Image (cartoon, helix red, strand yellow):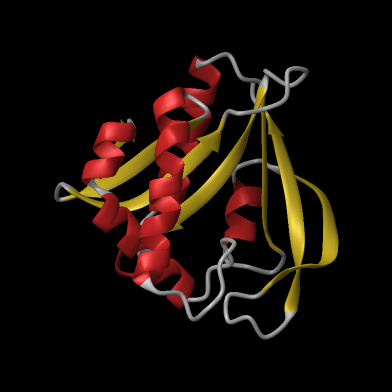
Length: 172
């Protein structure tokens, strides 16, 4: 497995693969801001909307590859207010269902942290559905639970509101 940074041009070339990963994650219950039914066209549209931020440096996209195919992503949102240039938001940690349980999510997060440190960032923030499979990962990586907000977002199947866990990590 290799992890690389995808610039806007590379992300545009990989739009279909990125869309497939996002689509697969939502269909398998990931709460990543979308609800079912979730057509592949909506996933592709999401990634197309990210291209300007990638191009302008407001976001950074890391991709995990196995056998040269992208199987996972994580994005750092770098477009923070003027009084917060030291931090980034972790967004869209996604691993295709066929590639899970092999340490890819952990590797992507560690790579994102390393890149954040390289850029001089000292704080990462993120949120995830409380009780999700992602929560133990963030705890294991040393993220601190800031709090849980009840009824924050709809579940991926759109049937109920779910609580959201907010985390942060100070980078040393």
